Length: 206
Length: 206
Length: 206
Image 1 (cartoon, rainbow over the protein chains, first blue to last red):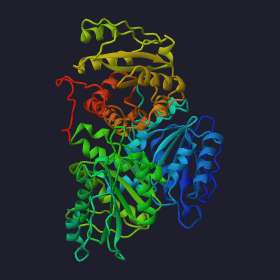
Image 2: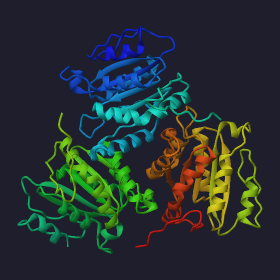
Image 3: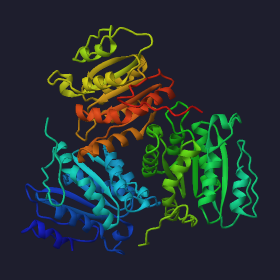
Image 4: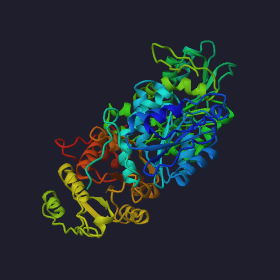
């Protein structure tokens, strides 16, 4: 399913998607921005559960981004060390300008995605979590249970999203307008968005 | 006064309440959820000041919870180590599923409840503080001075509330709809709320 | 320009303002509150860029405060250690009741003002950043990229503001109503504000 979604946008670059715990094999495109999509779920990582979060993120990005990009997709279990390791790999080795996680942001004992994110980030971006909780709170009072955060590792912006596909769309939609300019400030690739879907905002440069 | 309030709800279980620094002696009820109520105040702990915060929390919970519960009530001084110790005791030794504190969240030098809470929690829940400040901000611009937070220790949710009874009611009322589901996720007892007072919200289970 | 602005309010106390990296030489006024104004900018500290942030803060405070105050103004580069050192000096050596910073709160690699602020503070005040981002978000979606925070060091309140003069006014205007009471709680000087500009709010004392 992800393969289909992505080929829509990526045109002649067919994507091989594996829903097991291994990342998508994508042909390297010189000017394409790499974007990590990390699903954090014990059940999905064991194949007991179809990952819906990762595809929902890819679908949203495919609809919204008009500049070329390639996904780096992987599923890991709710293990703080493994999540941190994967975030590090996507940022440092794969050179992703953006990594979006889904899952593991709640209060349960296995929910450790925000901690793993903090482990690998040099600076935290509290405004992302605040805005996403505010937007979710308009839908459900349990939005305050989401501990999702965002931060910067080197030149990579890492953003946590909730696990539910519907909540992913709401949360990613809320913060997306600020992401292209954030990537600019991190000296990453220029991301362009479809104004009909999302107005990527860039203040006038000083 | 607390004794009276609590017997209203607890019916045949008379509660002995001591307003000095010692916890309430409550008969153990097998299925009752234990809820810690911790007043943090130098003056109240020395008996110079009648604690109004603890009774206000008990009153709110008595009105709102329809499932059986027993309070574990104690007053401590504004001492980071003592607060942390008491939170730990309520969570680990008494098995409270929820501990609610009042007082010590401001900017003054003796206000250290949020730090003590962080000291004992494995994970923080920033959404609680954000929402409580937002709600208080509609009443007073000084709401931003409240540093109240929430977090998880083991299977216990710890929530800081301000010191003023009126603000307690506003803040606890704002976050209460999310608490029963949070306790579910922590595998604690099932809390039920009076829909006329507060709609405890539980998303459909996956 | 700062000199001019400040003399308007300070009347017979002419201020010598140096826009290079050295603090303003101000005659000591016995009852005047000292307020630190710290511009954080690589370019402004090298004199390549005229500092607009510091003067914007002074202009706002001059318009708003009716009680006597003297500024302690300095420009430093985006260096975490230097910023921390200067915050410390303004708090500990100069006895400022309030220090307001401008600049260095974004996601770029050189933006480290919030980290330097945390380095020197004993307690953080999350409500300030939350409210300032909320207010800025009504103007620009990139407001969530601002990592500005506030905290307490000893008897000093430290507040980070963004770098743009227009955003400074919006953000400082949003939190100013809570600042005089915060300084009261820190046992600092009594700040009075012009009710036509800002209603400094003081809850009734217990």
